[in-house]
Length: 454
Ligand code: GDP
Image (cartoon, rainbow, N blue to C red; front, side, top):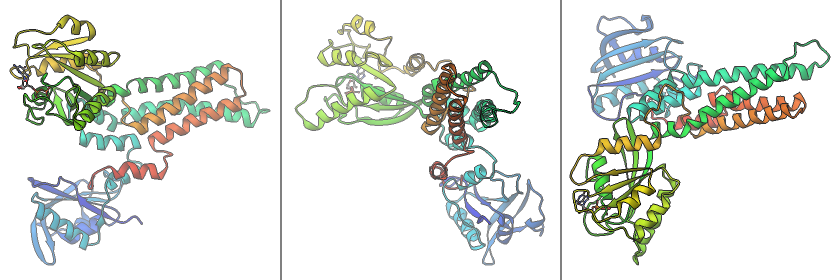
């Protein structure tokens, strides 16, 4: 028998209500030991989806008023018996209630253990379980919608559709290979090939959406780069809405990378304010400049900042050069001052330029629109299923490659045996993706990243 587990389901801060969740075969018995219903009834006789008002008692002492909500297996989040005790949301009272629940026989839940049980009991597949974590950490509208769609099964439905088609092919190929002399209705090569190539293309479409999907869910990894004093830190603070980067007019103040996650409308940016690009004899500053270029190379988006009040120098030219081939926006700053920089040179080198005064005006809407345009997420459709992480991407890529290879083998006239091995490999990858055939270490690793109580 699985042990009955309990944890605080609400956040680690004082709030109106705190919830202790108990799950497992003895969940209701355990809750009944610490909860006295006001009407004198027992939770043991309560049907699922019913609540009772009463008190939490421990060692014969009343601790708090509470509401006990009962779910009966399999109709609960975990698929097991579950009881949720809602008490007043003070940290101390919530912890005392949890302590009472432990004394009554429950054991502490591990991180993500409730969701892991939901997965193991077939309440959701692995992509849905992962979307629970994404939903909790969602920082913007798009991330929230995309994660919720995944939780509703949008990704699982697509993957399961592809799986079904490939498993049909595999069953047919296997029958043909195992019983060559039998009269098995044969799938002709064209139908077989069409099914396999369609699966490959559907998987490819999911992969094409991966980067944009990640940008929406995790935030766009954005580097703010430029020579000293162009206004990088001022821009960072404008976007972040607070004084995170140190803004001074002494060159070289931001010597390393300052990072901040900010929300601009419905887009989340993971901003990095980098050291000003210049020649320096100071070793610490030189390392900062090297890191700034490395960040520029890695980032999904570059905000290349120029000072319209100063003529362009060697560092500006180097930056322009470095941005070639990258998704980059030229942010021409300090337009409140006299123009001295050769703006034509900048505008001809960048696909998108914006003219702002980071110090004075609120230009965030214009910056938001420019970012969406350059990243290509202006009309990002969150109802389209998206792969949520690297693990899903790897499974999907492998499955796609196996499908393309299987198709090539079929066209090249290789034996059906060989084609089947590849189709089966694709099927295995997709079963790992949804968790139907996932290695337990991978499963444990996924849930260890959840918070306790989820
Ligand atoms: P960084 O070295 O590129 O990070 O530049 P800072 O953000 O520290 O700014 C350098 C100086 O330029 C500071 O004195 C800012 O107040 C000033 N500054 C930043 N943006 C503007 C702007 O739009 N107009 C004007 N006039 N000054 C600005």
